[in-house]
Image (cartoon, rainbow, N blue to C red; front, side, top):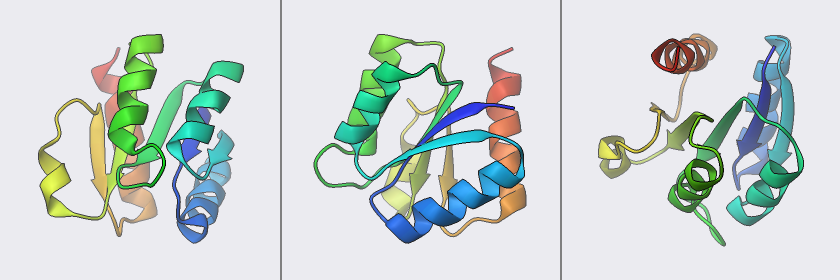
Length: 116
């Protein structure tokens, strides 16, 4: 079981991913923008951050940079709905919307195998 911080400004997407992750027995804390997400990141020990990239207030790249400065060992998965972001290599992994439950599970597994 992982403690996961999930950040997305689309509340419908946030709810669906949260349900999927909880069904896989993960603890999930959610935030609707990067600023709220980074505040939550400071208040709890997380094993993984999953963040949408395109968000108002503080985008996913800013979240990534913040997390890596604070704790470089915490993996960050970026969620993207556009192709140009697929080349962003600072994320531990990227997953493109729309994605399946299997793709999400596989991405999480791959990130932790990389970091072993």
